[in-house]
Image (cartoon, rainbow, N blue to C red; front, side, top):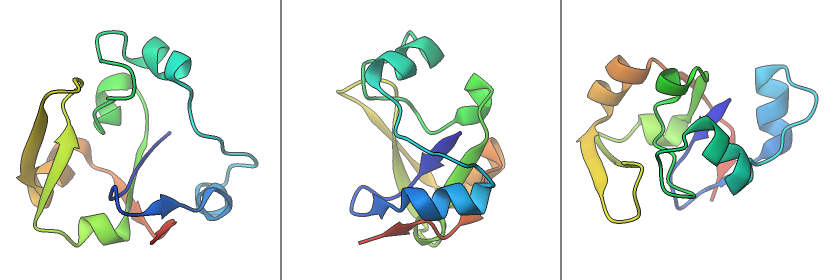
Amino acid sequence: MLAVLPASEAIDLARFATLTGTHHVTLASEKDMASIAPLCDPGCLPPVGNLFGLPVYVAASLAADDVIAIDSGTHTESVCMTYADFETMVQPRVMRFSHH
């Protein structure tokens, strides 16, 4: 699974697990991410899980933004787009699983 949230927030792993019906949730290691997206720089997985066969969950606070910036797969570039375009492209499930 891929959880997408604002950089200014933290994920509540227990709440995320409950909302997704998963018993145990952990953060992926760089090795895990490299196996999912080997062409991306370490730690720069774009939040387009549908390209990697992963369901995407978006924090409700991010879904409220008009424009978002996302990783492009490199440490030097990002992509800005409207949230509406992101939603059309990725079709994420929106949930409340993060906090400041």
